[in-house]
Amino acid sequence: MNSPSPAIVTQKAARPLPRWALLLLCLAYVVPGFVGRGPWKNADVAAFGYMMELANGHTAWLRPQLGGMPPETDGLLPYWLGAWAIKITPDWLMAPEMAARLPFMALLVLTLAATWYGVYYLARSPGAQPVAFAFGGEANPSDYARAIADGALLALIACLGLAQLSHEATGYLAQLACAALIFFAVATLPYRTVAPAVALVAGMVGLTLAGAPTIAALLGAGSVALVVLAPATPSDRHLRWAVALVVVTVLAAVLAWQLDLWRWRLINTAIEGKEFRSLLRLLLWFGWPAWPMATWTLWRWRKQLFNRQPHRHLWLPLWFSLVSVGATFTTQPADRALLVGLPAIATLAAFALPTFRRSMAALIDWFTLLFFSVSALAIWVIWFAMQTGVPAQPAANVAKLAPGFTPTFSWLALVVALGASAAWCRLVWWRAARNRTAIWKSLVLPASGAALCWLLLTTLWLPLLDYARSYVPQARKLSAALGPNPGCVQMLGLSRAQMAALQYHAQLRLQPATQVTNCPWLVVDNGAWPAPLDLVKPAHWTREATIGRPTDKNEFILLFRRTATPD
Image (cartoon, rainbow, N blue to C red; front, side, top):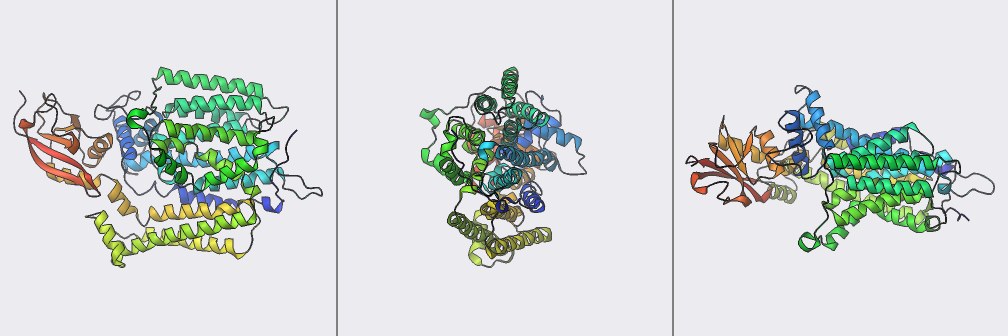
């Protein structure tokens, strides 16, 4: 016997969010952070380095290398996408780093779209429908599903952990988009044929090529069980789809085996075990505010969750969330693993909306209003201090944390930031003017506030962020120390991010350090000196400069000039 639905939604409460407003919010979230900046440390610039090596033909497409080192992650897809974009985009049209980001902008858009449509079809499931009223007036199924999908998209944009990682041209964004495609495929397959089939193949193969074959296999296996145990309708072709899921999952596993992509990066708890407190803090803020709402969903829908027949609108996002959280505790980096589960967590959060009381919705609104308004005001105050020196304390703090930084003024950034701030004020007035009945109303302020602060950071603060998070100042100092036409330059102990940044920004062609070349220059990371004698003899070199990053007191590179020829 099916338990009654906890969702009570009238037709008036199921009205959709205006399309123009939703699209404008997505545009304001997607574009800032991709445009107008250089590659940032560490994963962003390292991935860009491999893309440049592939685009310039300096390494093999199936075994990319940078300075003789393979990527830290085994995914090939992100490097292929960035390299292809660089190759087909003329240099006069845009810089290579911007060209490399274009496919990743498309991946973020794909993530948002796949999440919306996946939730829409999940909300159309019979078990997800609200209670039918005795005299009618309950929400129409399609209108209800559209309102729930709007809420899920707002919850995803509101997640604090999504902002930075989803705007980096790395394999983690590719993993997020491919996992969202798989989610969309499994959610949609009872209602469509071609779209979920294409999305399933693209998602499973893409997730494998993006460096997460184990997650792809787990998501595929759980989806098979869900399709068999929780068919959407009695006439659902679930057995046929289950076979298709098994076939695609096995093919993805075989592809990973053929390309040698299976890499177990489980944590050695005896050596590098993660502190439970740090992981707990990550879980608390990364998925905020979606995870408290998802927890509320599991509580309010608990009778449907543990019913005799599983409900797919609960178990599908729950399985995707559990796989992501499990990967967070067992692999590293933890935040990258948790990123894959954000669409599923946002989906669970959306199903909390039709169960909220007015007091809980008001609490979310007031907390969000205070948090993001204060954050936006702080961003404006610090920007004004950087430009004018008033107030003095914020200006002094910036000068201390970023020594050598010279603020620049941009009318375009100011106009965009003013427009976004005015839109926020207008939205707050709209929300507070009267009681709105739409079920997605509680997530309008969190999503808009997150988008506002992200936009302000990547417009008003963009020069400061570029200075603090890029290797450009360090690369320029190195170029000045080397002088024009430095010739051959060896390197030792540099990270992948350092190598990529120095090769691109300083226009160098670094070679691994050996004793058998006559390179006149040697660049060494501070932690790698003195060097092993089998690689470099310190007596053959004289230190010429010590070059640090202005915003990191512990990161230095040492520049040496050869004083003796190899034996």
